[in-house]
Length: 253
Image (tube, one colour):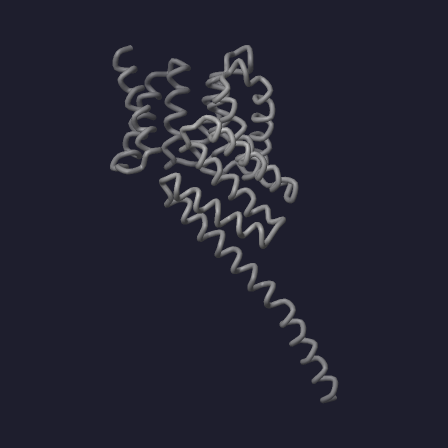
């Protein structure tokens, strides 16, 4: 009997030795992603975003076929592009964002966040080209955002709803623009991300386009509250400035 007990103990130890490193590596990887997300949220300059991208590239070189790193690299290139002045370099970073998010989707076809960033960077390229030169981008952008929406509408503070709402607000009606649809999606974005200032700016703009001036003013008041004391945050300062401009426009109407 003692022989069999010893065999069972040996098998148990062999199992633990095989499984524990894998579990530990998973925990380390998760901690690494959380730490990288923390650095990303704290980053403000293009130098910081480039440093994050370089770190992720090195991780991918050692650990290929990891969709969670591919979409994070896509996100980094999106942020670098936003802060890049040179048009060619900006477009190049959007291309990289699309490539890495597409790579993430090859590995994990149901990744909502990968659809979101691919659509976002496609949309930004469309903005660069102008509406009349970007007909071919509208469909893929909309498809990506709808897939992200179906998979997980909460990501990036209601990001898929926000992106679709802005699309339907900015498109001419004969290309699919629809103010009512814009309001619906942006209201959903606010519901899912109530503390995300960009949601409120988009919704105020949609209410204004709908000629619902009372709700536009109310939404802008919330926006001003959310963007109070944001010195040093260029993105939030820009959102606040746009909100202030719309408030002035409402006052003159």
